[in-house]
Image (cartoon, rainbow, N blue to C red):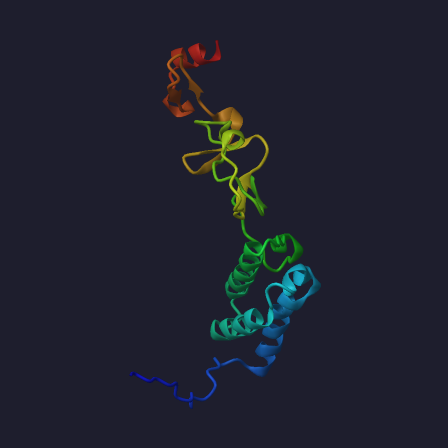
Length: 179
């Protein structure tokens, strides 16, 4: 019979260097998790461990905002897995998701965005239960080769449903597309 037991952890507390002044600012930022903005989830997912991890990570990385964003995102994802949706980026201006020009943040972006090649893709997309936050194109903009372009800059399709980008069209083809 094999018997195992755990030894006591005799290491000093593993705390990254953080100046007293820095730590106060960092604690204040990480305490957003125990604020009313996240209260709807507190009974299901206790924020204290997440706050402690947040403080540790932000001290470790000298107050880097992305560490705060990452831990808040993990907390929100955990809440979402328990059926609680929190629109935290909108509620907390310090933690914003930068979006490219001609797009904006949404907490539930389509997994099949509209493109020049298929402008109706998002309306035909199979809706999934899981939401993902991200950036979506502004009105009258769609994706084309990974860039946001005005819908008016998209090409067209011929009678055989072949798509032609604006840059690949000749004058004769443009006339055919428009008629």
